[in-house]
Length: 114
Length: 111
Image (cartoon, rainbow over all chains, first blue to last red; front, side):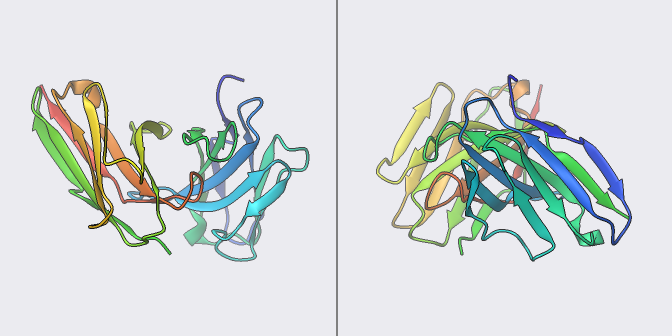
C-alpha cells in the first residue's frame, strides 16, 4: 500500500481481555516500530524490529505486551490481561532501513479498556 | 533514559508572524533530533530533523537549531500560515528509532 496501515482503527475492550493490533508497513521497509501515545503526550517507544527479529524491545512496559513479525512484513502487537492504563493510541511506523531517519507512521489503533 | 522537555505547551500566533518552540534533553548520547507535526486525528509526520554534527538546518519556512553543549534545540517557523496549525513534537535519541518525544506544542495560527 501507499502508507502504513493499522487495524483496527478503534478497539474497545473490557479489563482483563486479550487484544491484538495489526500493522502493515510500507512495502519494502525492513524496519518496523511500535510506539504508544497517551492523550496529550508524545509517542512513547515500545519495540523495534529489523526484519523478523525484535532488535530492541526495551520499551515494552511489562510482560503482558508482546509483538511479533514472523515474515518480516506485517507485525502484530499483543496485549494480554488488558488494564485501563493500557488505553492509548498505538502507533506503528516503518522506515526503509534503520538509520534512514524519517519514521513513516500509520494512523494508529485507538485502544480503550473499560 | 532520555528525558525531553518541550515549551510552550500551547502557542497562538497571528498569521504571518513567527513561531518558536524550544526543547531540552538530558542524555548527552542523543545525536538525532527530529520534529514531527501531527494534525488532529492524523498521523505524526516528519517536518525536519537535525543530527549532532550540524548546528542549524533550514527548509523553506522551517528551521531548526541545535546547541549540544546546552542540550537544547529549537524549531522556528516563519511567515506562519493557517495550515501550520497543528501539534508539534520534538524528539531526541541516540539513533533514528528509539526516540524520546516531548509532550507537544499546540500551535494555533490566527487568521
